[in-house]
Amino acid sequence: MSAPNIETIVSLSKRRGFVFPASEIYGGLGSSWDYGQLGVELANNIKQSWWNWLVYERDDIEGLDSSIIQNRLVWKYSGHEETFSDPLVDCRECKSRLRLDKLDIDSADGKAVCSNCGSKDLTESRQFNLMLRTTLGAASAEEDESALAYLRPETAQGIFINFANVLNTSRRKLPFGIAQIGKAFRNEVTPGNFIFRTREFEQMEMEYFCRPEDAARIHQEWIDGFQTWLHGLGISKANLSLYEQTPDELAHYAERTVDIMYRFFPEREDEDKQWDELMGIANRTDYDLRVHSKKPEDADGKRINPDSTEDLSYFDPQTNERFYPYVIEPAIGVNRTLLAVMMDAYTEKTNDKGEVRVILKLDPSLAPIKVAVLPLAKNNADIVAMAKKLKGELQPSMRAVYDDTGGIGKLYARQDEIGTPFCVTVDHESLVDNAVTVRDRDTWEQERITVDQLKEHLSSRLK
Ligand code: ATP
Image (cartoon, rainbow, N blue to C red; front, side):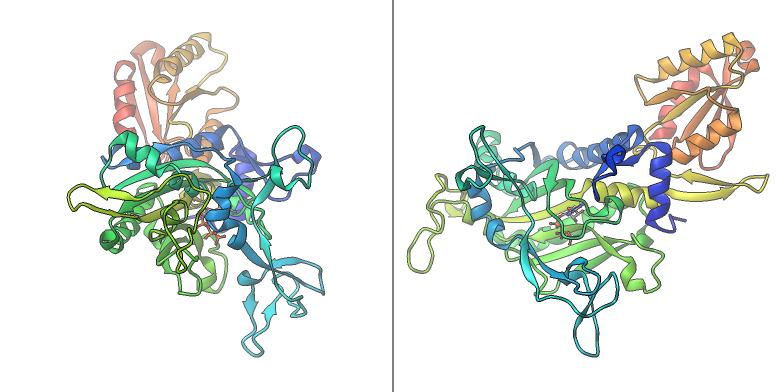
């Protein structure tokens, strides 16, 4: 099973320390969220899985960490200043501010319907730029245009403007990719649904540069590859689907874009409405490298970018050709991935006493804590000392915790709920036979393992 709705994950997250509402003691800040002691570990494990898979396990991808704040010209030539906007309408009835492209259209009269109150009395739509603005420098006044800067709305542009730097220093040949994880900011009109849509979020983007004639095939390979990776994170295939963007949905730079959708809203009656975007995989053509290059000219022979000092073309020594590579971009949010992973891992199980218990069946590689060491009797000094010693011995090779703040049943239930794959219990017998009980999160089965075999036993089962 998976979570029946996002609300279930919101309350589990708050109860156990995955995600808290930001600025809560001051009444919160709408759509901002803070990652607690377990959420930060889960997010780190997701990022590590992505990075390992792309940068370490393959031989054709380099990493990068570019700045959040760049020269404003980056966003001028990328097209973001002009086109990175959503169509905005206001409902005259309930005064909600809405994104027109997300509203239902009444089939009878073709009018958009307010998602809040159902009214069709909406204002004309106007474009609202999503980039968050700031000013740079001590002397800058609020309205000083020369001091204006943006917080990046995507990590991708940092990769394009560093294309030549990475190419020349890594001595790469096409095809190759550049991967980056980092924060991005969008002044979303309607943030919401927990961490699904926020104004500050984290992206994992990879730009894979290739010859134009290979782009369609490589695009399809990444669409297949990412479905496999997501499935490997423990997300069931039944909750993943593909959506092919229609020509009028495509971004101005894209030739083809396929979204991988997750069933974020299983409670919705209409099956079509259960799905929303987890990630997008776009064929961005040679658009980005061209617009940031100094050489390309328009039809009248005028340079399209008179400000750039670099030409981001590629010279192929084998064919003696110079051209702008195509780029395939798989872009995924850390936060949406974390939400999908938690929803999919959520399970309920009834124990012998008829009580419903929550088990978060996270893939062991993602689990925030790998093993909890628990003393059966917290007032027995020898048991406590042995449990604490074991925790210390396990910690360097796997994230381990010691907990004695409740009865054993309660401690097990707590670890199940946060997805800890194993509990190790030290009991009176352990002092005699130097063995402990290892309990499995998913089956609740227990086995007796000697202390000298414990680390190896757990390590092999965590793989
Ligand atoms: P949407 O249509 O949902 O607004 P998008 O198509 O604009 O998303 P992209 O620009 O393709 O999103 O960004 C790539 C990924 O970054 C998305 O698939 C999503 O996982 C994540 N992402 C984008 N915007 C947000 C946001 N406001 N909050 C959280 N994650 C986001």
